[in-house]
Length: 193
Image (tube, rainbow, N blue to C red):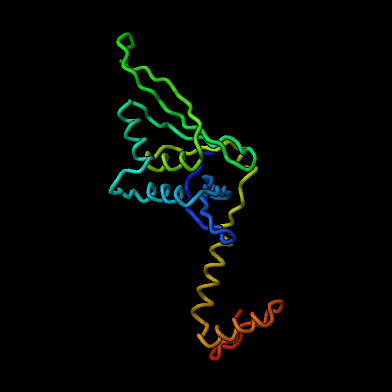
């Protein structure tokens, strides 16, 4: 199993659906999970620790778990079936036992859950998010942090050196000649790389 963390949320530009991005500890692989807008909001609220005026369903679940002496130990995203991720909640049940030397007996309960609900609970309780290696291998996309940083630096360099007139001219050329790269000319500095 691989412990994952929520790297963030994104929007799929092709259909405007939210995506939760889970990243491995090395930061080399990321698993995108498409969710609906309400679930994205619930996950983001948990990440940001926003306290709503009315508790969400996930806040209510956590309150009920605490009242029942249940502790969310971890979530496990364990499979993909018909393009749908499957997850379970691993919950510790604490019971007072007189015969035990420690006074408590702990049982583990596994409950099926949608990954989006499981992640929303995990970010609120700070429990760990796990994914089976086979799921990571099947669903992950590589993350190239160095390339991302290089692109970011190149974009900042481009923005610093381009004039508004050159940018408009470049965009007009792209519309009229989409298969050619006419290059961008800054009136002060010449062609942009």
